Image 1 (cartoon, helix red, strand yellow):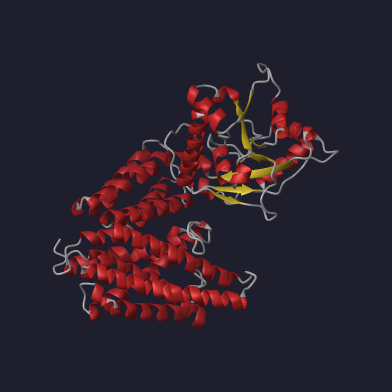
Image 2 (cartoon, rainbow over the protein chains, first blue to last red):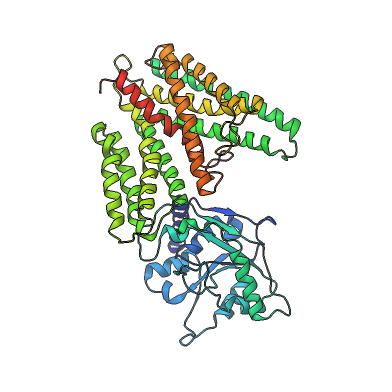
Length: 215
Length: 316
């Protein structure tokens, strides 16, 4: 009871903080809001990425959106596991294939079957290079094959890497936009490589073309 | 009721009346020309009028809350404007601490000094201390790429969004004989003249605009809009002499200076937007764009208005 209440409180506080700092604004695709159940796949450059997506979704989509995150990071301490599990109800996966006891794709499919939407970062890790996007891992493809009816929505998060670059602990206030693209699905006869290339292309096409901000 | 309060109520009723008129015109135009919401210009006009209601409401609350309310309102404006500005400039990771210092030290200290009425330090805090200390914070990271560009942009952002904008509430610190306790009306005078000049230029331009005045900077601005807007806002300012320490003639001259500074300030800020390849500074105010889109003319006119008033009328 108290834990639930605290979690609710924390989620509102985190959302208000994220909004006050970044004035986060969603740009929806011209076809409108994403479907009720979606897998949002986004570029990953900061720990705050999923918070921002989550914060700009309208309440009825936000309620069911669960981030998929690395168990080893979120179960590190009592506080992070409270935030990961209780506040955001994350699907915690084990990223190291050698050490893991459960299959991440299976876990994600189960969450979808329970009616959840997922927020995933197919780059697998935070991008700290100068490249706009790291090559995708194959998990998104396998998930799409397993649950081919669920819409995959590309989401480009702009500017959050400047709010809190790696190694900094004080965020600076900058305006962030979250650009939602057209939902896509895996084709029946599409190869893994083709699908991954198409998904990466769909995500990259949402990135702003102007790059002089990083001059 | 003190004369200050009754003057304030008169002003608010006047502004409310004008907005009521604007809302009715907007409503009729929408019913006639854009019943299905398809006419972009009219939808934008109505969004702007709605946002004006909200802005007038906020300013009124701040005035009622007194000195602290006014300072908090403008501190928030500075914060949001600085955020819009920094979002658009060249920054590198090495600037992180300098920018954090701008937001979390320079901005609060600037407004604290106004609250404490430490005019001597306030007037030089950003132009001297922040100007020298911020590049020092940035240089410690050892990243020299675009260094001059980066430190200039952050300093410019602070000057415009924090230092210049804070000269509006700084009007409260002036001590004008025979005008004690009425300083808040000076803010009302400045804001009404600047904003009505913007609105009147827009209206004159829409009605009679033919000749573009600065096609490269701001394609919607016209000579007719400029002349009509500045002239009518100057007359309006002169007619508001009773809320100021000025005579009608002085109030008119002040208004002319305010509107001219506001107009050219708008051009400067437009040039920056063009340079950065954006149409608006942000999206904070529905129909208007970002906060800086609404504040650009105020920032340029406030320091000049402040210093003219201080030099000729104030004891401090």
